[in-house]
Length: 152
Image (cartoon, rainbow, N blue to C red; front, side, top):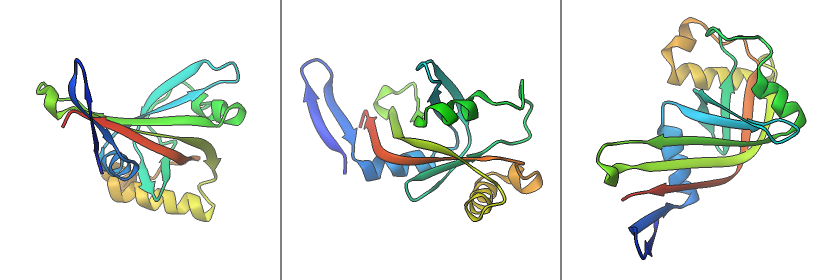
């Protein structure tokens, strides 16, 4: 349930409760994944995903990449703290919102039961994955905190 707070300058501000933030995030088609290396240097990439409960699932796919050694996976090995962010922009700023999940990321083998389940969920959301399943691995983010904001 959204919580409306009033600020002196901004008017009404709506903080999204965890359920609403998760729902809006899950409905988005693309989001951003933030990881950090051992020294705390951030790395941000857009990604496609599926949500299963409070776990956000993605997979390394066949889209061209600079390297097969992805920084997001290397970062998880040394620092599992992860944030995922989806948002909606509109020129009508009363329609703006964002939803974020903070949690711990981990790498999952595509041949494991969880990995196969992730690939099924991703294929349900993205027809491209039905035609060319991702080779993996799967990246799972176990979200411990959902938050968000909405202009309405």
